[in-house]
Length: 134
Image (cartoon, rainbow, N blue to C red; front, side):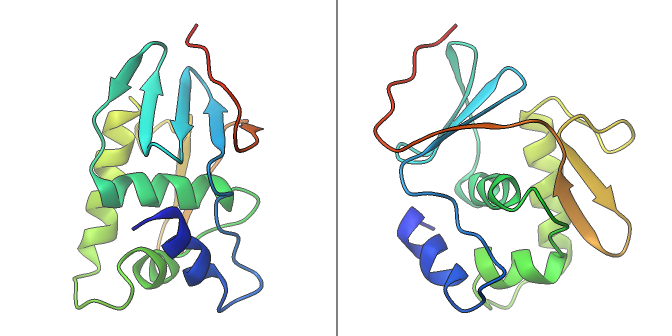
C-alpha cells in the first residue's frame, strides 16, 4: 500500500490519521522512511514486508490512541478476505524486526481483545528532510 493509499484509506473517517507523505519517523534507534518505504536501524536497512511496514506506519501515525485489529484490517488489507490472525502475524513480525516483544513492549503494546498502540517517543521529520545515519 502506498503513502497515497494510506491517505485515501484515512479519508473515510476523520478520526483516522494517515502518515504524512514522505515524512521520516525517528524512534528508539530506528527511523522509518515513508517515501522510500525503508526501516533503518542506525546505518542498516532492516527487512520489513510491505504490509508490516504499513502496519508500523499506521500505528506510529495514530500513536495517540489505540488502533483496533478491525481498523488495521480495514485500512491495510482494505476489506480483502483474510483471517483475523493476519493482523496478529503482521504485528509479531514487525515486533521481531524492531527487536521488541509483547511481554515487555518498548514500542508496540498489545491491548488484549482490543488492539495495539505504538508507545515509544517519536520525532517526525517533515517531508523533504535529509536523514543522516548515526
